[in-house]
Structure formats: structure tokens, C-alpha cells
Length: 235
Image (cartoon, rainbow, N blue to C red; front, side, top):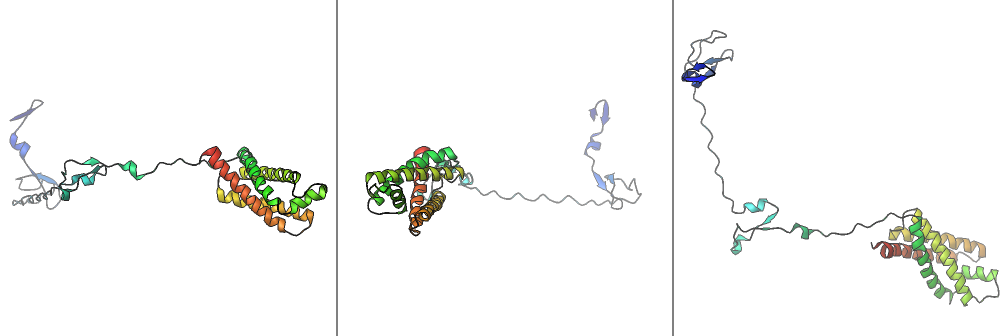
């Protein structure tokens, strides 16, 4: 006998099974002749429960460590011990690089455009030492007493390219193209061609100044982008 909170329950009641009625489906105690709900006769031959499915054999995997990406086991073909795995160095697969800063404003453009204009001016001084272009003709027209290839003309050249460098640098900073080499060079070439076109229109000696201005602006835009990226930002 079992006692539960003062109520005695026979052991046979605890172990008694219940059988579903084949007619209405209600559960009845095993051994009852008729269903308590529909009154139909209950079957006496109860089929035994199906046998439990045999457990699948577990195949021993000596390289269980392969399932873990963190563990790199030794090679068994070379006599390695599978129990002595080592951790993989996942960090060696990646290379950490600094994310380049590409946001720019007019202040960045001016600080890069001024040295770029001076460097471009030095290059154009060497060019105008041997060649005469629209800028040289315009300066000579304003002051016929100066030497077309003299030091005073080189001073005009430096001032003109410094002005062009400030103009292109400010434009690159405002358009946020300063840190992109290709875009900065292209924008510089367009602005340089426009400036050369203005000189050609004033002088009236063809449009060779447009081509020279485009090359000058391209070099100036590329130099401004390179100076900003390499000198000021370290990209």
C-alpha cells in the first residue's frame, strides 16, 4: 500500500494501464469488459508495444578536433598524436590596415593646394625658360620691358601657379575629391583647361593654352591629392 496525504492507494492502481476504446477513443482501465462511455465491448487482446529501435552505432572519430575550427590536429599519416592538437592562428589569415580618412573640406584643400601650386610653378618655370605660352604673352603684353625668359617672368609664373593651386585645392576640398587621386586629377585638368581657355581668349593666339592648362591642372590636382594623403594624413 502507498500513502499520499493520508489516502491509501493500492499498488495495482498505480501500475494499471489504460486502453483506448476502438469505437469512441476514450481511455478505459485495462481489463474492463465494456467502454464506460459508449458501452461497446473492449478488446481483450492488446497488442504489445513496438520494440524500441536499436541505437545506431557511434563510429569513433579520431579526428574529432577537425570539427572545431579553433583546433588544428597533427597529421596522422606522419605519426602525429590526434590528442595533441594545437590552436589555429586565425589572425594570421588577415592583415590589419588603417582605414583611410577621405573626408575633406576647403581648409584641407588650401593646405594641400598651396604646396602643390609651388611645385607646379617650379615645373612651369623650367618649361617657360625655353617656351613661350599664353601666360608669358599676357604678362609681356602688360609689361613689354620684361624678359620673356627672365627671372621676373619666373616670378609671374610662380604667382600664377600659386593662384591656380589655391583655386584647384579649394575646389577639391569643397567637392570632397581631394583624397581620391583619379578624381582629383580629372577635376584639376578640367579647371586647368578652363583657366588656359581664358588666357587663350584674352591673348587670342589659338587654343594651345587649353592643352597646356589641362596638363598643368592635372599635375596640380594629383600633387594636391598626394600631398594631402601622404603628408598630412599618412594614408
